[in-house]
Structure formats: C-alpha cells, structure tokens
Image (cartoon, rainbow, N blue to C red; front, side, top):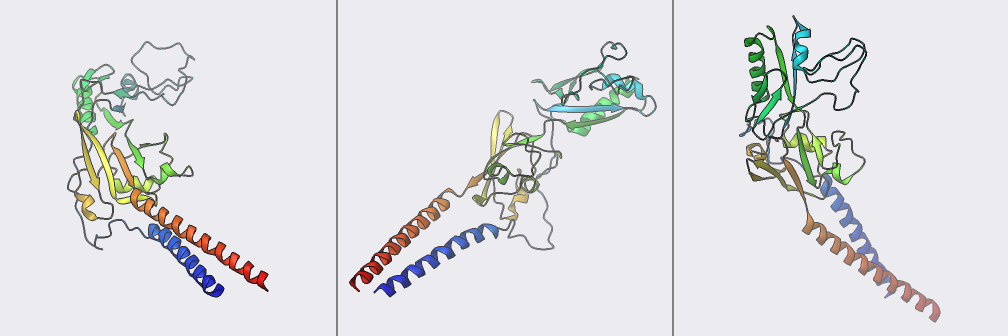
Length: 294
C-alpha cells in the first residue's frame, strides 16, 4: 500500500514539473506573424504619414550658407557665451558677456495652438494644422525668400513631442531593468522617427511580456473630437492592413493580459500542489505507522 502511494506521489510531482515547464516554454515559442510566408512581400494599406495636429510642438531650424548671421532671428534657441552665440529670438541684443542659462529646454518649441497656428519669429502667425513637416518647412522657406529675408534659406521642421502611451503587458512596464531609454516616464514612450510602426515600437520597448495576449493588442487614436479603436493580432500578417500599423502622435497602445488563461493555470497548479502536499503527508503518516508497528 505504501509503495503504491509513493508511486502515485512521484507521478503527480512529475506531472506538475512538466506542466510548469510547458507553460514557460509556450511563452518563449510565441511567433509574430506566424501566417506570413517567407520571401513574400506585403504592402502596407494605410501609409499617409503624420500630419500636424493641435497641441503638437514643433522644432524649426532655419539656416543659410551665404549669410548665416541673417538666419539668427528666425531660430528660437538660447544664447551661448563669449561671442559664440548660435541664434536667438528677435529681441534686443544682450550686453557682451551676458548669457542665457542652459537647460534641457534651451531649444524652444513652437506650440500649435487651438486655431492650428504657430507664432514664428518675424513672420508671425502661420497656419500649420493638417500639414506634413516638409510642407511647413517649404512654406517658411518660400516666405523667407519671397520677402527677401534670406536668398538661400534652408528650413528643417521636426516634432518635439512625438510620443505614444503604453498600457498593459509590455516588458518595459513590467520590468524596471529595461534598456528602453526612451521610456522617460512610465507609460510614455518618445519616438524619434515619424514613420514608426507597431512592430518597431514593440521591439524598442523590449517586447510583449509572457503574460500578454499576442492576439489582442489595441491602438486607441484620437480623430478630431472622437476616438478610433483598432485591434491588432500580432500573430497575423493582417496587421499590415490596419490603419494602426503606423503609429501617430499620442496614440495609446494597450497590450491585453491573458487574464482568464493565467487564472485557470494558477488554479490548476494550486490544486495539483495541494493534492501533492496531501499525498506526501499521507505517505509520511503511513510510514510512521509502519515503523511503530515493527
């Protein structure tokens, strides 16, 4: 009898070990785009590019090869020391040797106001809402040349607050030992490329955690005064056809947890552990009874 109980206990313990290992292994074997075929090309259905929205912050740099000093009034940057000033706002010159303090905000941004305008030095109010970065650069360049401020103006425009918000089962949110240096605030990830897609984002934040439901990654996007909700299955090539494949500023990306599956597994393991513990106690008791009878 004791021998049979010992065998049952050993089998149960073995089963628990195999179940635990298989659970870990299943998470490691998760394959993105598992229905995609090798050597096949997949076009992206929605690739309109980012356009400027109300509340965006733009960094705009104006330069000139022929007359670099004439470009100074059109650049909103802090002053530097000892005659090495790069550029300044169009304000009265400071006395020699007087400097503006340096700070992370030294490069000022142009805020797109509620009317979709920015206030640009010398040129005044410029409508930018709905435009691309290149279009804004071209409008400013054209005006600078047409109004004879600069004959060879070169303008570069970029986003200064291009970011998305992360929620749910991302490795960068579940682990403090992340290499995702752009995650400056928990949940806020700053993008340095306006053409960042969902796969690049997941890669840069360390991937999805093993508790994530890879078939239920959602993107919530503001469209005017409403919000659009997109569901992405990271295991399918269908993500290339989603409007949310390329991210936009202020998108909320939510990776859902496998709540039900995780709870079921936890309950199963808890039950097996309880049964194993009870069997072990019974075996110990039987062994003691046998010893005492002798």
